[in-house]
Amino acid sequence: MTVARKIKASLTKSSMIRKMFEEGAAMKKKFGADKVYDFSLGNPNVDPPEEFKKELINIAAEKIALKHGYAPNAGFADTRQAIAQKINKAHGLKLGADNIVMSCGAAGALNVIFKSILDPGDEVIVPTPYFVEYPFYIDNYRGVVKFINTNDDFSLNINAIEEAINENTKAVLINTPNNPTGKVYDKKNISDLAELLNRKGAELLKSIYLISDEPYSEIVYDNIPVPSILKAYKNAIIAYSYSKTLSLPGERIGYIAVNPDIDHANDLQNAFILCTRILGFVHAPALMQRIVAKLQNAKIDASVYQKKRDLLCDGLAKAGYKFEKPQGAFYLFAKSPIPDDVEFVKMLLKKNILVVPGSGFGGPGYFRAAYCVDDATIINSLPGFTEAIKEITEIK
Image (cartoon, rainbow, N blue to C red; front, side):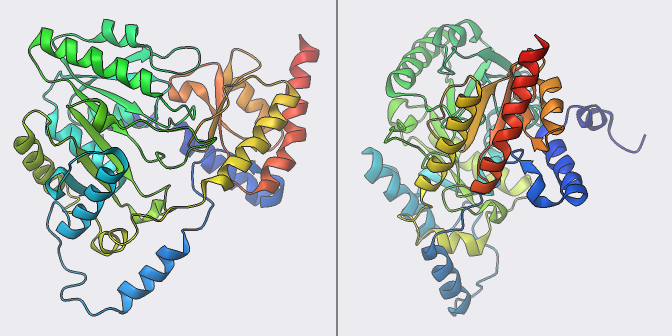
C-alpha cells in the first residue's frame, strides 16, 4: 500500500463538507450555477474591506528591505504588538508582543498548539457539534478526543465537561461563535467553565488549558457580546484567523494569543515558536503580517451576513423547519425533518440544494447550511426546501 494505513482509514471519514462542495461543482456544470443552491462550504462571499485593498497596494509599492524574505518564526514584533494592543483595549488585559505568535490561520494555530502541549494519550475534551477537522488535528499528535454533548440550545454542558475530566485531560477545546451552530457561549457559560477548570486543575494538581477557536469572534448579530476567554481564565489560549473578519481565507493569516499569567508561559511561548518552524509553516505569510498590523480596526460588515441569516431563517421557519437562530458566524444548524440526516440531505440534493449532514459534525439529526452566499441563492432555494419538508409530511 502506497498510502499510510492511518491516512487510508481517514480518507473514508474525510470531510463531508468537501464532498458536498465537489458534488455541487459537478451539479453546477450539469444544470448551471444559477440552478444549484450550494450551502456546503463556509467560503466568505463578502469582499475584504477597502482598507485591506489600499494597504495591499501600499505594501506592494513600498520599498522594504527583504520584503519577501524570512520573518521571525513568531512573527514580526510590530504586528504582534499591534494585535496585543487591540486585545488589551477590547478586554482590559495586559498582553505584550511576547503573548502573540503569528500563525497560518486558525487551523495552523491549532496544530501548533496541539503539537506544543500534547503527549501521546493526553485527552482533549470537545463539545459536540464540532468543526469536522478537530479530531484530525488532535490525532496528528496522538492526542485522544473526548466528545461531550452540549445542551439542547447548544450551550456548554458544564456537568458533562466535569464528568469527562480526569488525570489524562490536557485541554478543553471550544469554538465561539460556533461552527456549525452559530452559538455564542455567554458570559455565565464561560465563567462556569472557568470555575470548573480552576477547581479540577487544583484537585488534579495540573494545568488544564482552555483553547478557544475564534475565527468568527467579530461576526456576531443582534449586539450579542462575545466574552473574553483570556480574561475569564488564566490558562486560556486563543486561535484566531483573519479569514472571516477580513474575508481572507486563502491568505492563511492568524495568530495564537495567550493569557500573560498562563502556567509555564515561557515554555509555551518557546514551544509555539519551535512548532511553527518544525511543522513546516516556518512562519505566517510575511506580506499578510505587514498588512494586518495596520488593519486592527478594520473588518467586514457583519450586517450583510445578518441579513442573509434572517432571510434564510425566516424562509425555513415559514416552511416548518426547527432550529436555534444563529447568534454569530454564518451557519444555520437546523433539525432534519426525519431522523436520518444523511437521507434528508439526499432529498435536498434532488432539489439542487446542497447542505451538509449534521452527523459529519457530531450532530446527527441536523443539517448545516452555510449562508455566506448570494441572496438569490437563498431566495431561489426556499421553494425546494419547502417542497422537501412537504413531501415528508405527506409520507407520514
